[in-house]
Length: 223
Length: 79
Image (cartoon, rainbow over all chains, first blue to last red):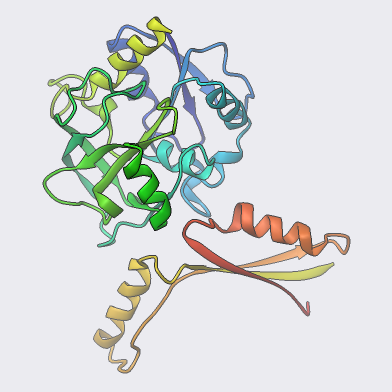
């Protein structure tokens, strides 16, 4: 399994994302924002950070990077894509996922270990979890408030496309406590919290996040 | 060359915590009577004369604003 991990100017979590891929038994392949080339990978992780300094809006400029054109095309063909934090913001700006992420409701940058409830364990990235399982992973974001119009929310809820929901309190004003969502085909997933920081109890609050990357391994191998 | 202004504002139904923070700070600074503040973005573009309104509309809708959460107005102004 070869998993591309994109680096933009201002990306922070590409190294941890690559490490998580390796922990799951995959090969992480570095992808550069300026290259319209996915190097033949089986899946892509768009990691967290502050691409292009979050100028204009978080993810608004990264969306137009040459590599993202390739990601959008590959996603349309069914390639699994995961966006974490800034990566989630980029996938929303690129219209691979609906909605938008806005400034946290209390303005505070939230940095803490966060419980999430797994609401959908049928996506390419979540089959290793039991439905309804609660996982503990770090959340670190200033613009994590998920917003979408009511029709979009109704569609997401009706189709079971809310993948992760905040448990034990809403940290940022996200509508319906939404922490992560998926595309209609279940191949593209975006979430604000950071599963790649929770893959080993030595360095994270749990190893609950590893299931994301193990799930991908299953999805790619069985494909 | 022409000057174009694009104003982008959070939609009315979208929570604007930055605007609220500004509004909440005003009484502490001794300014009474401001009941609401909304915070947006103001862009000033210098554009070539052959850039038409349709192009400007695309720039605003596809890049300067995010239609999910923001409204915008494009207008040409005297340079």
